[in-house]
Length: 164
Image 1 (spheres, one colour):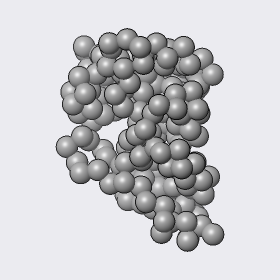
Image 2 (cartoon, helix red, strand yellow; image 1 turned 180 degrees about the horizontal axis):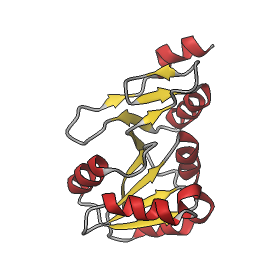
Image 3 (cartoon, helix red, strand yellow; image 1 turned 135 degrees about the horizontal axis):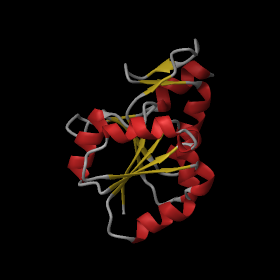
Image 4 (tube, one colour; image 1 turned 90 degrees about the horizontal axis):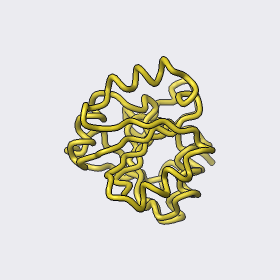
């Protein structure tokens, strides 16, 4: 079963690996990212961050459908991590039963028109549009670095005024 879908521009790092896997008793982490799937150095580096008792699997976005559908059906507790909102949207198209997305870190500092939600989450106009589409489908978008933090729901009502 898929316990959490996370958007994090760093993908997997110590904080995520330890806190989220412990909180949800995660058995497997799926990193869905086309670049990482084809980069052995990145795979080795990301494997260093995972807890010993957790399996880390890598998939390209176009090739993850069967693995995700299997994860829904079996007893393994799975965490899915993507790097951006575009990938999260595509995963939601594959798995419309996803009703919540955790946003960890998403820092688009190079975009001068980006909207700062907090120090960890900075959204570009196209991210805001994707977030709105997800929320229109009933998906809750919550910002939390670790499970112990109070969740901050993404509220686009004020943001939309600034993006015209």
